[in-house]
View (cartoon, rainbow, N blue to C red):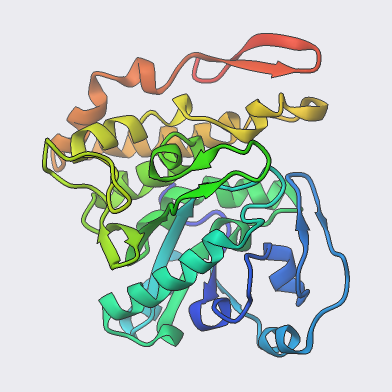
Length: 311
């Protein structure tokens, strides 16, 4: 987990603001105007508008092969932001463009906070930055999440009030922190860099993700107090997953298995650095059995069974 196992792919913020919607990595890479996303493949409906084609003539994607390359870009004024959000549909992350609009606002807030132009900001967004169609390259990018989350200048949570397109349930800051992937991203950034670079996007701009006020309640601007929220988010494998909700159609692997190696690597780093960051190690040391369960419950069309995870 020390360096990238896959290229760090980001979207130019000014180009992102011209896209009009969240698009998959493959759609942006290939210059397609839009695509229908699924967990197993990407289907392009074909056709592209002139304005979208003009935006994509110069690819909105940039690739960085190593953390040193990111540092070199930062040294000349490029600002990197890791955007974390809950998907609002099973097959598409943002069917109603709610998160797209919130991300555009967050990118402008990030530029203002950093004192740079929008064109100087580079955004990591899961569906656009991680390959969606090739499981092998996707797994390499997932294994690189700790390295990705720790090399950026800003980690920003996108969690406006919304309704999930498939379940009809409310999605907000509270449901965001219940998601396994969201917890993994928060843990990756916190474990490497602490909470100082972590924010939540609001209508009033960026606000610290955590507050140290023990009496603070969850609100659109913040996610509970520091200790309570962090304790919840560190329980990555206790989080909710869409693959489990759908009962792993076709016997597909559980996403918990894909996250096992990078999360274990992060805890290994916390143990290694426990003398330098004793407060960080203290947050997990007494919870290792709970945070890294020996097995997990796997359910598909054939039934439910316990499978090994860290056992």
